[in-house]
Length: 131
Image (spheres, rainbow, N blue to C red):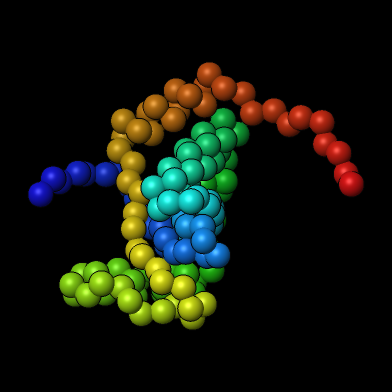
């Protein structure tokens, strides 16, 4: 078994919705989609890194932590508990979707890379158009 030590983790609820996989980062209330679990998680990882980079550039830590509604944390805990008990999560959530509890971890080195990237990229608003 490989052991990894992370400086922080983001809990992720992974489910399937109308053929696509949905990955929901609970501590940041970010959602991504993909044709596969791997694609949805990869997109979510990118969203998380961009949000952290943006918060660093703006010097505003309130842009990082924005919790999802509590019901999603409860669903994550239930799915995670099922795995810990050795049960494959076959229970249906309140929305009748099969869900998995996973986490995306970040090391200090990952954060240092994000900080370096945020210094080299500038976030600027482009022209805004209203329909």
